[in-house]
Length: 368
Length: 244
Image (cartoon, each protein chain N blue to C red):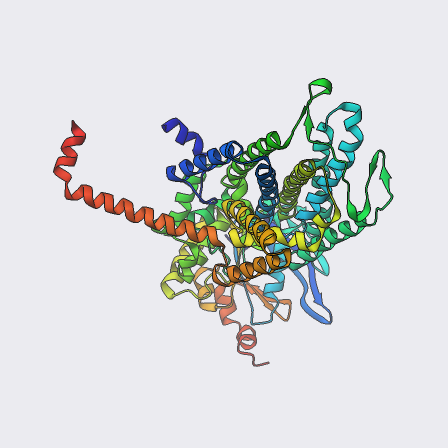
């Protein structure tokens, strides 16, 4: 147990929520529940659940770049879209040749990263910051939506880009070589997404609680001051922005493979606003807030949309967003965790008091 | 340091014809400035003398209209702020800017962690000792007094082991006791061989620390000299009292 808690320490620190044994037990239980879900739910629910989890990649990418580094990026959906389109185009062309989508997956991660590096270079080395970054990244997202929408009749190799209708001939995610390649159907896809998500969460916890986390938070808190300690903030921001684009791109590839489909609206303003809402409501400066915010609000959105209609769902989501900003500007999850921590501390005090009250027997018992 | 030392040794910092114009306003006008290694220099002058603009050009926040800045023999006129820091400069601006949401220790870890090889724990403790904040290491910086925040920032600046420390009005808003401690701190730094430039408005503080003073007025070097010389200088009194 002590070896386990030692190895957990690398993932702990003041920059992420949840550093107690209680938290990790809860975390393991949650992962276990998620892993058991396909055994109790039908395939339709598993498919539905998969897409909720896939969008969490975008939420986490936004938390990294906005919540931790302070770069207000409206462009995560652009990177998601570029990843999705790359997967569709490269995968659609190569699946017949190689029988797999390894290259497509790689391209869907690298291309958005490269794109973000280029965009970020001009922004950060050009000293663009604050609201202008939001305007530029939003513009880029909307321009990409426009470009992909105007591709009716355009084909790249075997793949018809399909204009506003998108590409609907995307192969499954297929990893491996030739005959032995494994095609991820609904349930394996679900498990793959879960494993990647857990890995991403732990990876981010590791990075953010280490040296990098300090510097990113320092940039968020006071960029000019941090520069005065000799940090090249342009380069650091570029790295965070690029990494976040790679994460969003991976999400885009998974999304596209999941539905065998990608279309321009994922880069439209309505969809691009969603990750901001999830992350803001959940708590933008916490990974857990992004995860739970994205999950719960998607669930709510889908449930409302199917029981009422989608217009009402948007309104409800908007109201939640506004109320959350007014009442809990730091998000729901940090508030809940503070409450739980306070209670846990109270409990410990109670236990201590109880022990002290019966101290003679307690000490005697320990010695034996 | 004697006056001869000051003139003969190779300067750690030198400006040559440094000028900054904002449109028609000449904020700093053709300033030649030399600082010897290990020297403590006070830069004084009435409001609007160009002290802050000069300071910001040294720090790299303003780029000069004309002239050059040489630091440790290298031309840094066009160097970015972080490049100047990496060459051995460290800067504390006038406004307090600690990281308000982080603890005292975390604040110090940010500059210390730039070079990953150092042992921050030990160094943090040593620095906190210097600014008498050992007991407050886990306090959120926002909850410190104004003077303590100023000290924390000075500690953050010296944590980089600079060869040259630039301080802009380090005692602004401090109590008399806090100012005295700051005097001791700055003097201990120069005793260790660190060159320090202090830009100051308050002449009583300058009297406590300065060996050699440069007076700026209307963007130009008005005069230079020892505390006694400057205080006895009727022209300096005149510009300070605004009797022109």
